[in-house]
Structures are given as C-alpha cells and as structure tokens.
Image 1 (cartoon, rainbow, N blue to C red):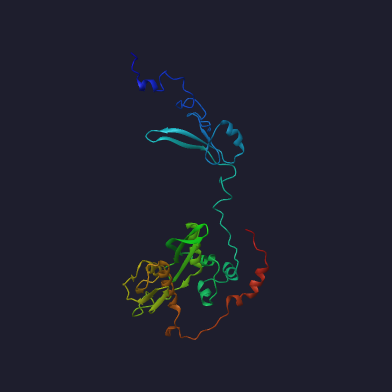
Image 2 (cartoon, one colour):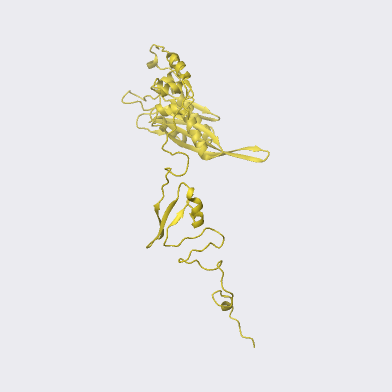
Length: 335
C-alpha cells in the first residue's frame, strides 16, 4: 500500500523535497550585502552608514560614484534604540551651496515694485495714512498699499464652495472662497475669488478683500461717554433677496446677529448692535455682501457734527505731480 503523504512536510520550502532556494526567495541577511530581488538599489550592511542622494533616496556603491556631482549628499548612521527600533542619525548632510534644494531661499523677501502712482507715493512716504486715500476716493489697485497702512489686518475664510461650468466635455469644477479681513478698529473688507485650487482661491480672496477695505463709522446709543461702540444710525444693505438692517444698541448688548454678519461686524470693530434680516439668508455670499453694504453705508449720510465748513485740499496726485513725473523716468529695479 502506498504510504500517506504528509502534505505540509512535502510542500514546506525548508525541507529537501525541493531544489535549493534562489536569491529571490532567500530571507535577507544583515551580514551580507545583496541586490534586491526586483532589481532595486544595493542594500548596505547594518554596521556601515547609508548614503543618500539629493532627494533623500538610499544609493549603492556604483550609484554613489555616479552621484559624486550631486550637491547634497548626506551620510546617516543606523542605530538600534531600545524600545523604539531603528533610528537614523544624520552624520554629514549640508552641501557647499547652502540650503540644498530650490532656487534661492525663503529668507529673501520680494521687493515691492509699485505699478501705480498711488503705490509710488506710499512706498516713498508721501502718503502716510489710509485716511488720505479715503478722503480723495483714490482707487487702490495693489494690496501692498493696505499692508503698509494696516499691518495688523487679520483675515478669515467664511466659506469655500465648489462651482461648476457646463462644457462639451462635462463639468469644469472650480472653488469659490469668501474671505473677510479687518483690524477690529474701523476697517473691514470682503473678497470673493474662484480658482481651480482651494489655496489659490483663498490667496486671491485675501487680496480682493484687502483691495475692498472701507472705513467704518461708529457712534453712540445714548450719551457720548467713552469711545464709540455701535453704529451711528439705522443702516440697511441688500444683495439678492437678502435684506439686513443694523440698529444701534446700548453699551453691553453685544452683537445680536447670525454667524456671518457677526464675523464682519467683529472685524469692523462694532461692539454693540441689533440686526434684522429677511430673505434667503442661507445663501452665505449674498448674506455677507448685504452686511458689507450696510456697514459701508455708515459714512453715507451727513450728521450735524459733520456740518463744519469743508476746507478743500489738493489731491496727492496734484500735490506731488512734479515728483511723480521725475520718478516715472527713473529706471525700475529688476526683480
């Protein structure tokens, strides 16, 4: 009778029923340097340091000879840490060129080269406050102007939503960002930007918000004691179907508003206010724009304290016309 075959013993690779194992199946040994079965790089021995190329990949002996021209070659030592396994310790890593990969470094700040007459006057110190810009209604086309005047400006993203355009090949999806900026002391701006990537949309929204910064007028609810704390009167703004009304409130009331208008009013520096809204306020974009329009209307009416005779002054462009003519002829610095 045939003997019963032990299947596990017959097929187990460690017994002599099969030919000798090839290097494709052999377990890696820590004492030998061997080539990876799939043709990868040559593994070093555990007791000698590994070499890395500029991208942080381990390289073998032959590859190290070819990579002598690489600017960033680091040696790391592999050591066994009790309880933590292997740990790589850098022995030598900085290249002769300095900071390694990339063109230049992050330490180099970009020099602002103004493209408008207002930018040139701000850069050269001829205009020292943003109130001069608002007084003469000069359009601001560069966000660096706002950065100079309002260095404490903070920004916050209200919402990021996908928007689509129908094309012959399908839909083209982009991301729309609503961003609000403000210093909490009478200046606020709202920006909207769409882009293919979220980070680009947020960056563009911040720039758009800075370019739309407006002054916010504040007033009192009762006696004029202390600093202005509320809106000077009843203000209304609208966008789409949304209507928002701002009503002055006594000191200590706080901002009685929904999430979106509350954020804009906080950025504007208003401490106490009542709000009333109608329409489809779930549309965040229209809700934010209606609030921004209501806030911007604070300087839209004349109160008795502004009845003083206006002394007209020259516009900065008219005042510094000779300076602008000379500076326009000067060669611009190359970036």
